[in-house]
Length: 213
Image (cartoon, rainbow, N blue to C red; front, side, top):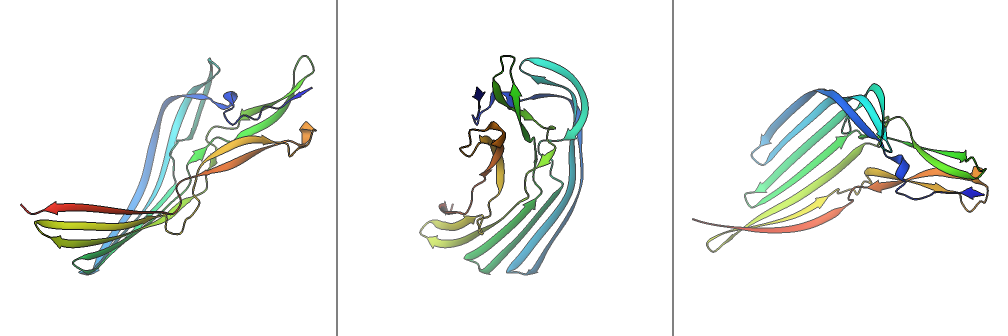
């Protein structure tokens, strides 16, 4: 008898890490300029590292001593920002902002086929080394167009904004599941990971009104 566990919320793939401290360090370069009263820009680059020290880990209520140093949950080695602002007239403003960062670390999963004492077979999804893999790099371009209207007693500000202009599929998480592709043979089963993405292209409109005092 073969038992296949394919739940996407597998209870055995959670681990508690007890931290004994950590450190972060980095270097950032920043530049800005205004080539004319109508055009300005700024850009930055950061090289950084975040590390956590582990003193133990816990699984199913049990605690095991384990001293090691791993990447921090939000460790991102490279980060780039670039921003350009164009003001063709006092009433119009176009702003474009691009960002890039290396992916945050995550813990991969492994699939094992086990045999119980009674001879039955079952799948076990286990954790790989904690936070040893990185998600793909994240990058996107945001654009915003502002227009100011003079109205009685104040000003009306309208904006049209587009997030992730080129609709890049940035991975925020992986969902792991067992896929046997219809085969009755458990040796044909594999552990697959499905991408869970951040928001793609998203347009939005906004209005605000300020009044003269």
